[in-house]
Each structure stands twice: as C-alpha cells, then as structure tokens.
Image (cartoon, rainbow, N blue to C red; front, top):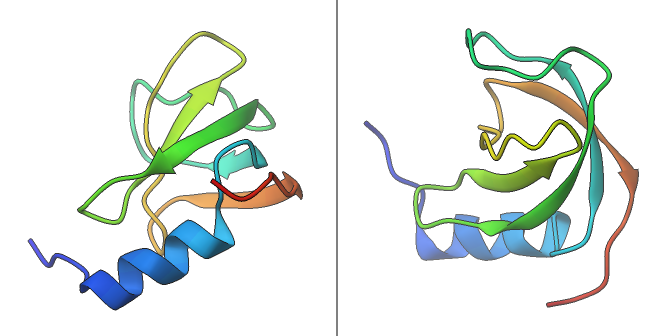
Amino acid sequence: MHFPSREQIAVLQRQYPRGTKVELLGMDDPQAPPTGTMGEVMGVDDAGQILVRWETGSSLSLIPGVDSFRIAEKGGQS
C-alpha cells in the first residue's frame, strides 16, 4: 500500500477541511452508502483517506483517486 507524504496529507486537509459537505457519486464497496448520499468530512487520516460521517449513519471513508465524490459545500478551516 502506498502512503502519501506529509505534504500530500496537508494538501488533502486544505482541500477537505472538517465540516465540508460531500456527495457520493460512486464507491466500489459492498458497505457503501447509496449514490447521491451526502456526508460531512470529519478529517483526513495519515493514509490520506477522507473520514466522512454519512447521512445514513455510516462512517465509511473516501479514498481520493479511487472513490468518486464531489464537494457540495466547503467547510471551515480546522
């Protein structure tokens, strides 16, 4: 598994600050929320995954470059 550098993590944290609203467009995971589900970014972990609390109650993370999603509303700076 490839882990991003500290600099890459910092970029992701700036792109997806805590509170950012995201919409799921597609995820290849049997536990994935339905397409179109909205979620709120809780943070970015050391592996570069975006931690999301989905409106369905799930907390499945997004993987940039693998999962398909869009920013619906930018959050504040953490």
